[in-house]
Each structure stands twice: as C-alpha cells, then as structure tokens.
Image: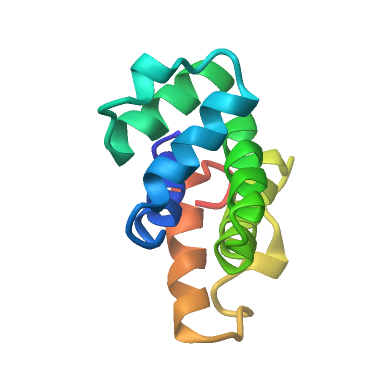
Length: 126
C-alpha cells in the first residue's frame, strides 16, 4: 500500500502550481465520500491518504488517472498507469515471473530502478 501512495504522491507533485486545488475540486465534485471541508486545507499527503482510506489503493489509482485526464494531464496519467501496472502484475502472479528477472530485463536505467522497487514490494518476486 505504501508503494501505491508513493506513486499517487509523485503524480500530484508533478502538477503545476494550483493543480492540487483543481485536482481536489474534481475529487469533491465526482466523489461524494470526499467533502469540501476535508479538502479545504488538505495538502498532497492528506489528499492521498483520504483517497486511499475511502476507496482503497486500486480505486484511488483509477480515480487519480481519470482526474488527471480531465485536467488534460495525460502524460502524468500515462506515467501513473505505467508505474502501477508492474507491481500489480507481480502481486497477482501465482509464481515467480521469469520475464521480470533483472538478468533478462533489458531496458533503460530508469525502468530497471522501477523494476527493482516493484520487486521489493512483491513477496513472490523476491
């Protein structure tokens, strides 16, 4: 769960100035479990915590991606989806997936670092 919260916070950090308030407005408008008073003085951490508490990690990611798209932050939405898929696949797997073996993983250094952090979050990948 901490890994997903970090992904959500990274996405919100990348919003331009005023973007967090716009994100919170969309969140309040589209989801009745989030009240205006809760978001009024909420920072990024409180916003992410509230989303995960109300919706769970998977739904919080989906909601964040949808709101980012509404805000025309398509690159951030794609990045969040991309970063969220790998650990989800690893956690859902019944067996160790050879295709995620670091020895066979031939991609950029950034992707390799993302793979290592995802593997740390997965009991099955270790």
